Image (cartoon, rainbow, N blue to C red):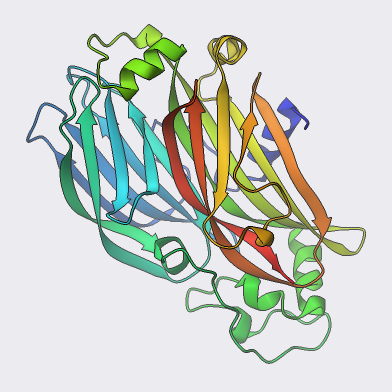
Length: 340
């Protein structure tokens, strides 16, 4: 396990759309599609939007964000997904007046799907549902199954990726490309790195007592001092190192505010753990499946780093954040995985 702020700096430097943004990460990348909406019918009022944005040669950036109204009487819990997978896009606590985004990177064909947002105040056990069209992609929006590699014709060594490696939007399909090692190496040598994964902004209770009150729907009086915002990410990456394709996995937890002292204090006083659960056979990931990774301070954990020997598939996994053993947020994410 290794923790370092240098990893966060490297991630930010690699982001081709980096810019100042609000809670929902607007104005970072050129927007290709947006579906906004709102629900002001009850005592939990909120706005929401899903977006597809331009990112790099192999990925679009997908963002799902919910913004709670500043006049809401209490913190609320939201789940954006479908009946069989309610946390597919995001799950978490959202304070009055704040927004909570989930970000995923994917290059498969775009989609617009019927999904739903369910929500409740945390001093009530009264879940309500708001149906909505949701911007998604074929891989992100699919059921828990592997994305299959399609038959292709191989190019000459060192040639640029031909049409069979590219979808209708012109994005390189890494799973198809990886079936030809020479073509994959040529691409990685030029681009240096390509990734698949996601990021989630989470609201963490500052103590186990607060977490348990939220769990039992007995948190009666909202106080901003009871919570701290953090950003967690689970990323898989392919990079070109020493003439070889390197497949790496990293898990991070950093402050979502400029002042990280509040998060450092919480992590030193209460158990904060992140679980990763494969939604397919666990042998696709070269790190312990269904294990809880503990953070005693902000930073990153290098889960695995190995030379890619075969081809790539997209394998879905679930990330879950726990405070004092209480589930406070999570989402599904699609990762690169090596096909044996």
